Image (cartoon, rainbow, N blue to C red; front, side, top):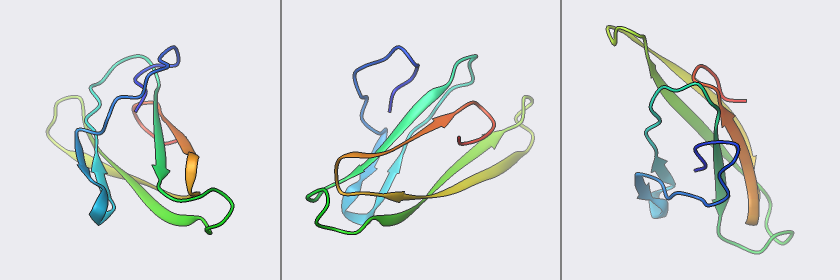
Length: 92
């Protein structure tokens, strides 16, 4: 997880249950864009990509209701993985 475009160091997930294929991060409201990098173990080029579903539970400003934002991506093995951007409302 990279909290801003200027960050170079990854921050680990707040919850990491990689053996079950589950990770979670909490992103507070802000004005910038957060980058979320998904990676998986394996040798790049030798294993096919795996389909992953990324979900974000977004609270309204008054926190009275929420909506679920989802995006499906293919995650390749190796260090590259896939990078998404979160702008506070949608996954890009």
